[in-house]
Length: 104
Ligand code: FES
Image (cartoon, rainbow, N blue to C red; front, side):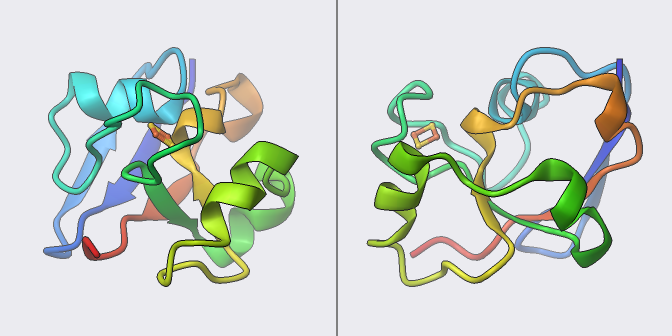
């Protein structure tokens, strides 16, 4: 199970050890600032938006189609954007770092 680091909108570094499920679920379990997961993980709210650290973008991979459609309507979207509800925490992502953008 991977260890992941989230940098909150307040620039606080939160480290989740042995995170399971999706990144959104793990962040909600840890009550991480800036991750709300309002739609429950069905790609319709973007309240789980993260910017993947540049060195992790390739390994995390691009957004899926539904995710890309939702991100299109979020002004915080950039080339490193993902919806954390669509990131399954796998061992390959051990050490991943993401930043949580400010709320809209
Ligand atoms: S929880 Fe709503 S889009 Fe991820």
